[in-house]
Length: 277
Image (tube, rainbow, N blue to C red; front, side):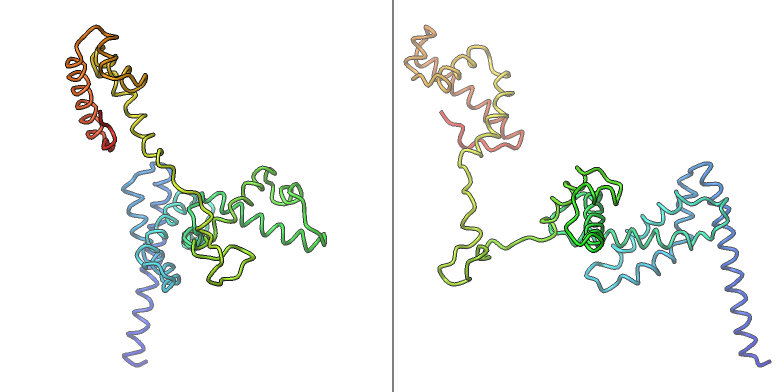
């Protein structure tokens, strides 16, 4: 036997021994972890199996996402596999963990492919619903009912309806896109032209809600003045007559109240530009 052949055989034997040692350590740590749930054991198990995660993540490279982000998702799958694995079943951990890691990464890409953020459960129900509908359509040679789809995949009919409602979230339309049924010529209406305009009073809602709580910080007399001036819409002269005080006193009370409210609104991060006397 040549020296190179001997060396190669020795290296292969060493690798095999290391792999066996790693498998034994993994099973031993898994048994301990399932009893203690120790974070230190979990960290060690993740470390031992990090090469498996990176190997699987590499298979999803060049799909528009950073490889490190994919690997991080894979590590979440690894942790799920560690939590679910039963050492007493006698299975190889890597064999059990691989589909779990790949499933987590696939779900990550599926989540990223939706134009709008939709809860994962709804996405999964949507995919199941579409698959069942296609299968039933082929079997029945007609469009299946909601109840038939629900029965096929063991979901409530309301869950099927909810899943179907998220379908538009997979794609978005440009506001510059011509309205369906119209040509894209110069005079065609665009989707954005049919949208309603923003109500200019909406900006006041946040201020109004904030003021409701802040008014309690004013003195009773200041609250009285502000109510008569800005709720009953009385002039300062009318307020003075109603309260039996001078107009100058009303003006000072109003100015002090407004200043206090402006400061409080600014401290809460609410714009107070429109708060004026």
